[in-house]
Length: 375
Image (cartoon, rainbow, N blue to C red):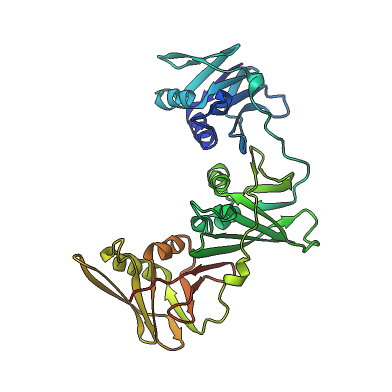
């Protein structure tokens, strides 16, 4: 194999591979990236990079290379990435002889000892026709508006992942950690034209979705999605990502979404973000809640922390219905959701100080958050 690569393209591709390869593993091939070069008249011309950790696999192809000689190599991902990143050249030449690859720049040569290509585990191809297609920008929105609420460490393994549900031409994505729940809805194009309204669900690891956010960066490109053999597959013209699914049952999320909120506030999104951030400045681990007093006259946010001081921030409301209410929330939980809100206004609904609040923006996003005790 001999290829001349655009260094910036190679840096970006190797950075994506770095999200999959294992740095500590008894299997050296799982810390490697496989490179395959194909001539311009091949079915998939250019340079293809593959990486896997045995649970997730990524395949990425670029045609911004000059293939002088087709072939394959299997190289330690961290060493190759470091060499390419530190280079001062606009292009890099990779030439392979057996398991040895020479990386050449204008003023440097690096000889890397790789692994036998035949030892690399096969990366599964996209299995047949897609179940549905979705715009990459829509997929990004669904992931960004939910993944932050995923449990980081929990014995209930299912909530360490994100629930994907599809019925017809609607996709619903849900994440929860037991203290909060984020739900986003989006549109897709089903292979059956949307005639099958049966709900098809899967729990996708958060690591997989974080990779997706980096892999498909053109908002207008279509992403094909397929469920097969307890795995989920995502594909574009240039990339394929496949992942095992999380086993277990996701909590019945619809049961925990309050439907009886009789106190409703309409707030300016930017103003609310600013008010929460400022009120959170005088909180600490022992006193990390912000008290919110809602009334027709507006919203008052207060916080206090021993030996630090007190804060009070006022915010006018666009609208408020219901009796006055005082309720406390962890400001970090609120800000996590507010960061992904893309509307100028939002609605906050409540029932009582000890009941969850529901934040909504239109019909496609809601966020349920448990209050904190401020007594």
